[in-house]
Image 1 (cartoon, helix red, strand yellow):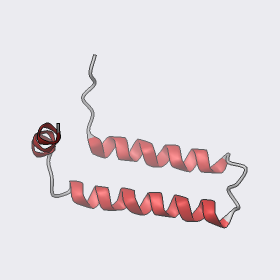
Image 2: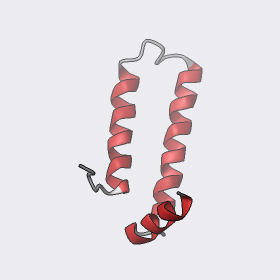
Image 3: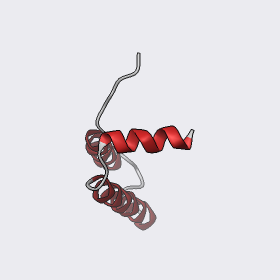
Amino acid sequence: MILKTNLKDEIVHLRTFIKKASKHMPDRNNRGFEDGISVLNAILDRIESLLSYVDEPMLNYYKSKRK
């Protein structure tokens, strides 16, 4: 069964997972780890800004062309 989900909702779930996982990591006070988390959040910000210009049917079209 294929679940249809909104990509914006999945980004929100991914952000909450990153936030929860980073709290329980033993290396969370390491500078490199914090830089990696900030890079991940910056990438998610860019994806969210891109999704404001693309709707679901257009995104499905791009996915079909990629395959």
